[in-house]
Amino acid sequence: GDVYKRQQWVPTKALRKENPDRLPGRIAFGGYYDTGTFDRLDGSGNTDKALGTVYVVARQKLWEPELASDRGINVWTAVSFGGKRSIAPITYFWSGGALWTGPFRRLKKDVLALGFATEFFSDALVDQKVETVLEGAYSFNVTTWLTITPDIQYIIRPSGMKSIDNALLAGVLVYLTF
Image (cartoon, rainbow, N blue to C red; front, side, top):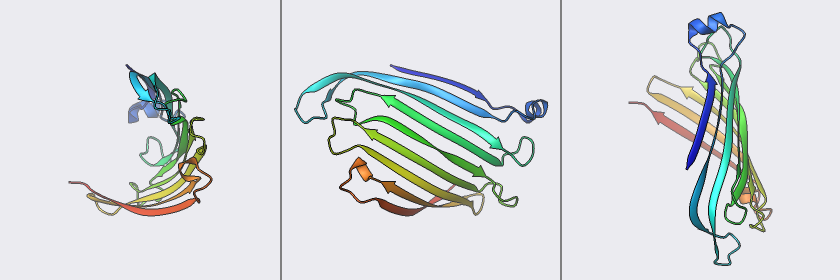
């Protein structure tokens, strides 16, 4: 079964005016439990039962140029852990970053994003330990229907393996809204 709980303060502009020093934030936590049967990671051909994970996600606005603005800087983090090491390839995951919405007054809908993600692999995967991804992106709202987002990622120990060289990836996302 799934369990999910969320607590947040996402106020109206009127409520923000009553509490000008309180910036919006959110924290959510939950988890799942699966009673199914799974193949073990050790390659033995044996199986194991039941798999569960819990997670926490938090987001907080740190700064805004004016009260109740859609523009501003937010930080976020997410953590998940759990699962039997014998059957779950990733037993711990941590990510986080910062989003600056409207970094320039005339470009209120543009977003600058910087983030990271780290995966910790199960001890049952002998050659795999930790993978870390560092990422930067900038979303340009060209029109009301077109957004272009160049993105760059640096992957440290891809798939958690020392035998694979670190990788630099670049791409562009194109969003069409209709």
